Image (cartoon, rainbow, N blue to C red):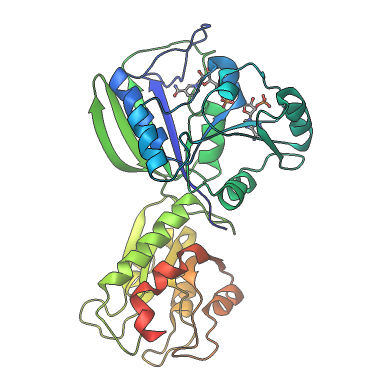
Length: 376
Ligand SMILES: NC(=O)c1ccc[n+]([C@@H]2O[C@H](COP(=O)([O-])OP(=O)(O)OC[C@H]3O[C@@H](n4cnc5c(N)ncnc54)[C@H](OP(=O)(O)O)[C@@H]3O)[C@@H](O)[C@H]2O)c1
């Protein structure tokens, strides 16, 4: 299921706090950075905060610039992004600014919380129950499919950011580091304890904004189960884009592949007919660049724009077999192999029979097909 692009936005003190414990909201950003946040808000379809942030800060979460709002309406969008909150208890103050400013409002909750929220809010917002517990993936699918949200900005607090990062659902983190200390262990932190991705995130860019620094990071570590993570989508997109480098062919597909270790380190990448080898496949080209005894292969994921081949005329071993022999047990692909060159090829079947997990992301199928349209 396609999900919205999820962008987490937060400002933290030098010692990692989101706020202090005083009654007023602690202002961490600089004026120019508040204006940057305004521009980001104007660029998204929806803004989400936890119910804790509504209770603590009583925020409006508006696009303040009249020019930016005018540009949104000129582009056929609502003047303000959809405002969303999540609550388990349904304990929402109907007098809070959140409900009386901006455009449409939406509440996601549990079945029990939704009853209470609907009673308290009395029609001010749409209230969507998501079952006995709130499942973030179900929430994002609903936002995408029912509300048409493709870009979601999440503005805290720490409980929300922590869950989205730990569940592999955040595509990007926009973090502003403010030059002050809080020093109070009772104050809320950006990220709480729990299991995070191993290894390092990818730094997208940094910029100085008055006396604060904006850092943009993206997750890197592949998912571990059957459900794709934000990092899986990033790496598969990279593989699809690599296929553009393939020398053209009328008799073979153009495919890109990336091999990524469990901690998010890229081990190798390759593409069809790479270098001087006119028949090499993308996965084969990538795996050939990794030492066969590299212990990271066991926890690695192979991203391939096209399902690895199950049979081939040009070489004795098909790519599905090469992947299994390398010890890789997770493959993410965008496109099942059509019958164009091989009837009923089933690389997925070979991989699964060999003990590997195959995850297919159909939302990237068109991108994977793009360099191959002349063959279809
Ligand atoms: N510096 C910044 O950039 C920034 C930005 C935002 C917020 N903040 C600060 O962060 C603090 C608030 O953070 P917080 O962590 O306490 O609150 P929060 O993350 O805003 O919200 C937590 C609440 O959201 C609901 N919730 C969270 N996960 C849920 C789930 N899986 N299912 C159902 N409901 C769920 C629960 O609401 P119920 O309790 O209603 O069930 C929970 O109490 C404030 O001090 C605020 O100033 C700072």
